Image (cartoon, rainbow over all chains, first blue to last red; front, side, top):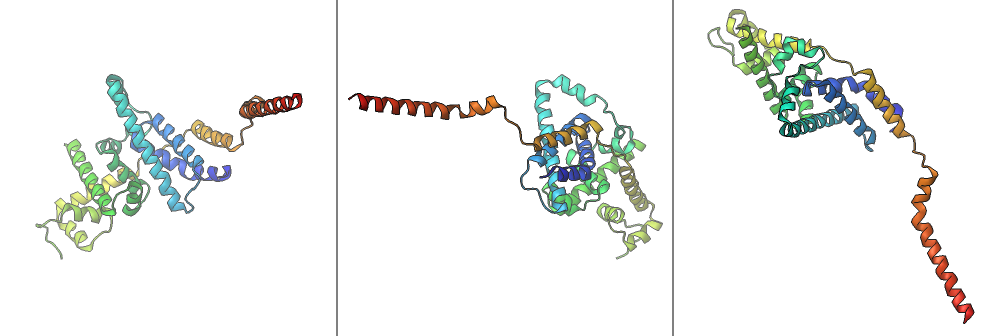
Amino acid sequence: MLHQEFRRIYDSYSRKLYNYALWTTRNEQASQDILQAVFLKLWKQRNIPSSAPELEAWLFTVTRNTCLDHFRAQKRRARLYTKAAEEEKTRPQSGGLDSHFAWDLLKTLSTDDRTIIYMHIKMGYNYKEIGRIMNLEENAVRVRAFRAFRRLRRTMSKEER
Amino acid sequence: MSKTSMTHFSDDELMAHALERPREDITEHVKTCRQCARYVEDIRSIENDIRGLPEEDVPERVSRKILTDARRKNQPEKKPFGFMWRGSFPFLVGLAVIAAALFLYFLFVYLH
């Protein structure tokens, strides 16, 4: 791949992927590392998907897998250094998201459900496209999105009481 | 099938109405049913709140690092002379051993 092409892909997708990682990990440093890892992988990749939707799906899949690796590593670390991990969890993350009520609601969802909501509402992906990225059936994505909304509504009602 | 305000629509129906495609019968129903209207309103409000969440820019130093790293890796690495010599060292040793063996063989043949 030529550097110009890499640059073009970076300019088109880096912000989306970074925000996706932020939504998933809720950690700025981790999201930056994840973004670097994803683009390093893209750079090393010999066969890049030729069409834009395929490339986008590829990038999101790699980002998602890298986020999952991050969680696995975090879990391993937590087992070794439980106390340090607890401190990391409770430390408020910098950035605008945490100060929002909607974000407080979203924190109650599982990582996958949050990802689905993010891709559907913020990025405008349909259930089929999300399913392709997350390796789920279209209907399963829809069911999970609805379930997540139901949960968000319940949490919202509780907070209002 | 239209429903009265006493028989409510299911969660899934209201959700699909709020998030996917609005249905006429539900639109009519929520005009008179406070409970279903509240449900649809809540879902739309959550959707709007999420849509309105800010997005962060990739920090400049991160972008710079990623793009610089890629450019650096694009250029063929120049191998220092020492590295090249080390790489061909076994071949040179082999050649020297063969030359020495041939020399000794011809010396032996010549002397006898």
